[in-house]
Length: 204
Image 1 (tube, rainbow, N blue to C red):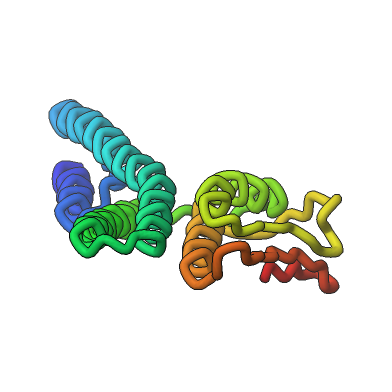
Image 2: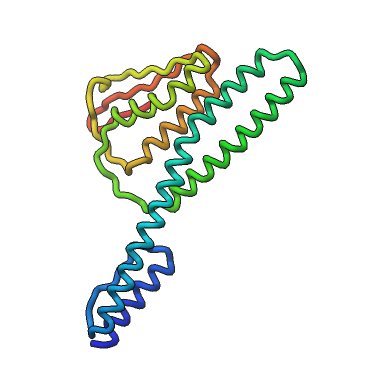
């Protein structure tokens, strides 16, 4: 009766030290071990909540900074293309290098926040809603270059659900759209296609 609750507490402490902030101990045994288990569980709950809040903040802040940084870089590229003055061009190139450096830092923070975040189980997500949201975010950056982002496909008027972890599809779309914008010529066109094939949906 005495050692079993202590082994439970030790097991929780070991998991906690390994980074599993969800570890909790059963409240069993003599009153003293029950009190200790409750205290440890409450402390673990508060710590888990604080760490989760910090990760969410870092991920949200990094995510929100990506779009304006991309738009700023595109604007600097446009300025550089239309400038003949060597000194102005040098200043623009230095500013562009700083924006690129900031973008790398932001991307690094975003990757770190997502890597440290708890892995969430896949759940049914409305693909069309996610696509619409990401296109809305990226269109201002595309407009700066006169690039058109169009959506087409066999399920454009549908709301197909796909199994995925929340946030993962957003990240994939952000990466693909960012790359597409970077290589698209001014006045170009990016087409996002959603196509239903049997029990799957193909996004391209």
